[in-house]
Image 1: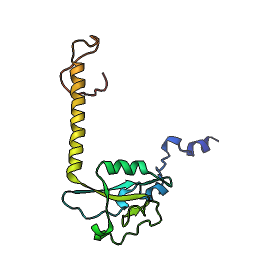
Image 2: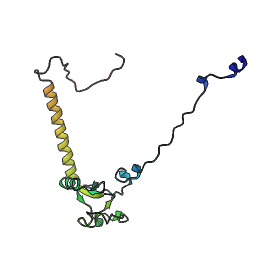
Image 3: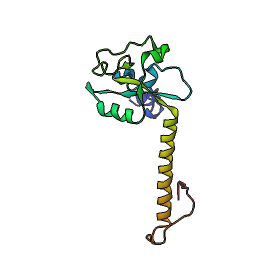
Image 4: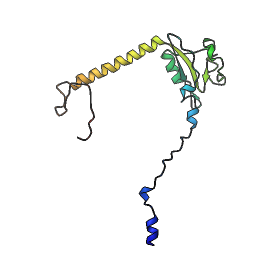
Length: 164
């Protein structure tokens, strides 16, 4: 018996290779709504932005999203405007296909365009709003009427320390 015990190796000396399974491809990876690089894009043009807008969600027409996009300046691109996408087969059976003739509709998404100046102006408005919110927070925080137990600092930075 003692002879048998000496020939065994300890469990700690066993080395297991770390086997990792290859991530399975899910159906969502191939859905064009989630993988924007799979959608055909028109050649870039100066002063024009392109974007796909959702017009169908779960098989139902999403008129709210499409209307919001139209208010934001997005308009459908007609097939004649982008001859490089002539090979794309649009969804002719889509409920909005009759309303938007010759539009490029793929998987519930419609290709739209907008003047780049509108997008730049909207981004600048959002940046101004963010800056004003930060300024208001800083002014309110540095106000003398705040809770005296809250430690105040003048710099707009933070740090993380470990082991204190």
